Length: 303
Image (tube, helix red, strand yellow):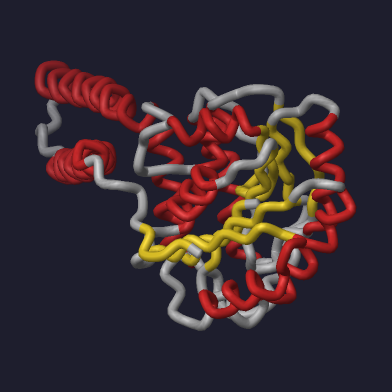
């Protein structure tokens, strides 16, 4: 099990007790890999207490990051350090419902190599739900791979799938996209999204926006093609404007002023150029990150 942790000290014990109660009846040897992603509270101490108390029932591994490297880096580290035949990825904020795990395992035993949880309901504010819905629709329309709607990190993957994801080298990682990209036999289960038990979201709106950008620019070249489309549209608009000017000049008695139209076109053109330069900058920034080839994370201690 891959369990990223960020400031979850208050609810970590309740979460893990609920998770073990759902998994133990399945008859697996259980390995839980906690990843402490630079928590500022007592999450590490809570993990170490859980490790001491759970004893031989569960093999607990704790990876303590040197700082906060982000949720996707934590998921990556967890997958790389698991050894089981099947890997469960699950957030520890108690929003993912562990009661659906037996259904996931049944689908894996029936031949599915990837089983993801589709969120059938969300308890976030209306604005957040609207943004998530819009994101999934836009992402599905611009990417060549099919990513299930409303399917986040929660799910399980076969050992071979885990190894293939581990071998993918990119640094700007979006796990649901990578999981869909590698292919294999995939299936889903419905899972209601529960309310967060305590504290604020580990990501926030800005973090979600950054993750969305990583998804857009990591799995689609369509934004780059907007430059060509904009050039064609602006050329057509310019040709129409020139034709109108020539017509007024040679076939009417009107003066060719068009000052407001020209200024509008200039402002529109400049705005489009800056927008497209910004898109190019997003791709270049990600290329810069990949070229540096720094590690995804640094582990300070392993327990």
